Length: 110
Image (cartoon, rainbow, N blue to C red; front, side):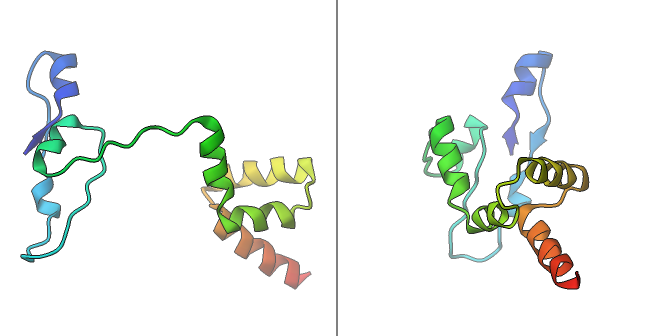
């Protein structure tokens, strides 16, 4: 069981434990990848610390997605359209791929 040490230090007592073993497959082969910021989980196997990206690198990573390029193209660089679509996606929980499908279907219906 992995223990939430942050909760221990904040509340001064034992924190809630995370029993992650229930998520492990029962097979006797294969690998398990756990992503977490809980340092205590590094005891379960080999740890590979990942550094945070800088803002520039984070933006470049996001822009590499082809659906982002298609999204920008379908809005023809119109700032008002980008802001309105961004607000719509935020309010409805729609992601870029879903919005592109909706946009393409609506465009063909016109």
